[in-house]
Length: 265
Ligand code: PML
Ligand code: MG
Image (tube, rainbow, N blue to C red):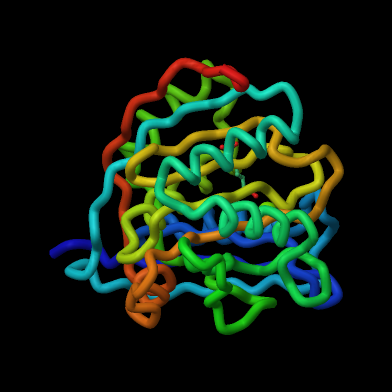
């Protein structure tokens, strides 16, 4: 009989402010090590030491797992944050997102997408044509959950990321999340940059583009960041949110790792 699989996830905060989150899937014997690693991560974060850490462990029904492949990974080297953002906007347009909707989402992210001007705990949902925000809760947004890499894909990914100096949890976790999101019913593209003050990178992801990284999508020290999911007009929102938050996704294949590009070209 197959071993049971669990979703293990962590959310940490300080004085009610979101600090960090993590998502993994594991068999029972791997759970204690992952729990310890997640607690360590929450206590040693660039945004400060958490005063509340919530761990959730839940058994998953193996018949419900969707298997996906990582997209191709590209890195666009831009000369400044402004150039990086201009390149990201042009990619979002290439993926079919209305230019004003993309610019508006970027502007909201750079000013803090939560009503108090802080980063949101999850992602914004943005109508890809009108630019209208569609998420119910503008503090929480939509949190993508229940996904991981399997162990053989993990090794293959490490082998391509390590020589490029990119074998870190930011890249690994963002790739897994972006893979799940780009296969979501009704998501056209995603824009993300980190809310960690010490990490300036971000990406645009879409099934038509792959995962396109920008090493500098915000200034060093900036804590406002997050994610925008651009939604196809007329998409079934409850179905989309259910997929993002509840569908179990195991990434078990890798894509290509392409040479760096420059912007402006
Ligand atoms: C985060 O960890 O907060 C998001 C990181 C996004 C960019 C990851 C990368 O360098 O590709
Ligand atoms: Mg973060």
